[in-house]
Image 1 (cartoon, rainbow, N blue to C red):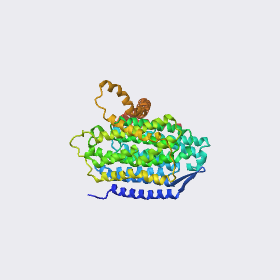
Image 2: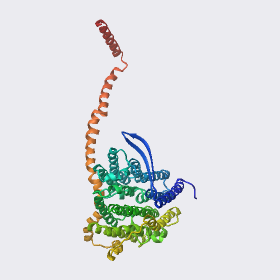
Image 3: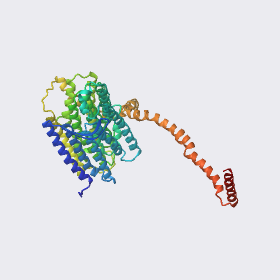
Image 4: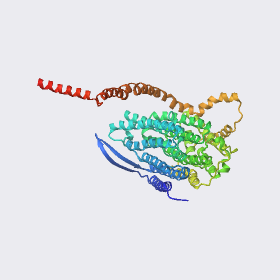
Length: 578
């Protein structure tokens, strides 16, 4: 029975806002309009603290995509989270998450950016620990502490910009490249973007955040938390361009692509494969940005948001139907049990691989061809194309495991596409995953730019994709290895599958020092001298005094008379001395 609840109300509200925002974005793009709204909150020591909104085609278009995906996720959650007694609290947390992202998107001012930036970190912690268990708590703490590094970098940038009398960074575009202070601020902003978008060495938190409910994962990994760092650096790109930080970011982003692609080919958890796919695509966006292509990075950001949200929603439907089972080795024959979900999943995977005329093709293929036309290092070039091949490899490996073979789950699982609240958002996002690439390409790139490549470079991308697909099918069909080969490969597989031991290094290398010192401090101070001189010491001394005083408080006439005569004697002595 259809009845009004918070899911349907907020779905309709966000969908209408998304339509208005998209219409505004396209209008502003065609007319080349920018609206700058600013009001002063207060002024201190000559520095004005202002609240600023920047409405241009970039902010409005991205906001419309965030709102559209959020509306679909909330509608999807009405079924996925139906059994949750606190579903209203969950939806309110999601709305707070979307509001924080909106603040970040519309703000050109570092103070108002901090509200959205910190809001994303705080609400993401609440959502990651939503299923309250030890694994979720650990994942939430890793997520929150990793993002705190970026928060501190933004705070330091705010403190440094105090020297210039304001925090609207767009006022200092011409000044950034000529002043050492502005170079320091650029480095801090790049550090903040790297932490939020999980570039090496801050990559461990992104797969750990899979402890959150699947609708949240869809929202986080498509258009909100992980893309916040990319969006901030796209906004800062005129300021940071030409800085040495661009070269460092290029190296780290390409290595992140390669590491995530390798890790996804050794992973068997359905959600973690898609999470590592997100990490790989974030590396593509960051590297495109580092190569001086902010508009292409933004284009890929938008197209990626649609098919990545679709991937997570399809994965959530499969997990929901298989009674919360996430191992892809047990998920054969899904295409017969859930044909509609399988079709949507296949479409999203092909868009991720860059299948011609789907969303990912228009952005990824363009980035690769501009890279071929550029003057990049040969090492960067090779690793870039290997990473592209690995993307196709883990996509086809996922399809092979989940769509073919026999179903290895128990017979009690009732998998199907009967629930419209799950299938309607998937079909809407599938339509967008097919259309949004060509639609944005026609609008964003009004000027015709000639891409002229020799035939072997033109065919390199499609060749790498075919090799990656073949590799993915070969990896999936490997069976019956001898025990000696397994032992030799086990350490290499552990290294590749555990993201080059980044989770261990992020937690196990840093934490023991602080935990050990904290334990000694706890034993020597908190349970040592503080107890002796503080609570326990006071308790013992006061107990001793009270036991002595209790003797005087017994109803003993002799003690009362003796005390009375001593008191009278004391008064007489005092009077005679006066």
